[in-house]
Image (cartoon, rainbow, N blue to C red; front, side):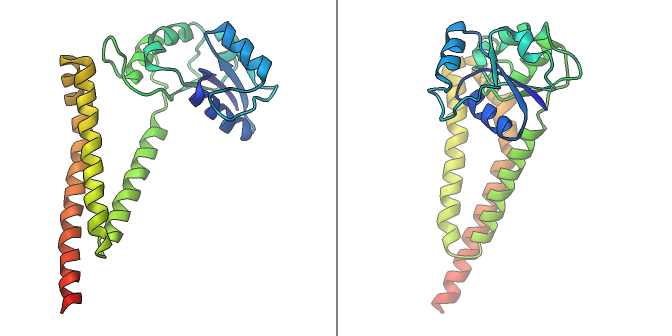
Length: 224
């Protein structure tokens, strides 16, 4: 498979390592001629422990990087996504699949990164399935682990910690949105963060109550 990675930062390099080790042809794009020359000269990145093989092409020419690619992975800071995706549009064809590895939201407009790319390139051929699968698997592992540990007194400690960490994460995300984006952050939280977490919170609370009640029952049984 021919893979184009947009971005030569730590995440881009890590992805390049994975794809290269799985026998893919990898090309990487950077907007910095200085960075390109440094990477080619040193043969490695100071951002991640990865020696860059000589057959990985690094270029500042977007056309060279994406022209023959079957998969395009965008791994750049969110603030550069708008301008970079507009440049990518010039060379993108509808047979190519785009995967967005960047995180966050577009700073000026608070648009989701998926929407930025879709609007600039005018395509729906963007693969978000892997992100969904990873989130689903992660959630299922935590739920199963919580349920299993709930059969013992140890589960009480785990679930209290789990509920605390999940609540902290949600609260931190919402407060960060509001702190950085003011009233736009409130809207982003209402649209993005809160709805996606309501089901999680409900499941966590049900599991937490179940664990506490079951652990209490076990404790009383042991005491008798």
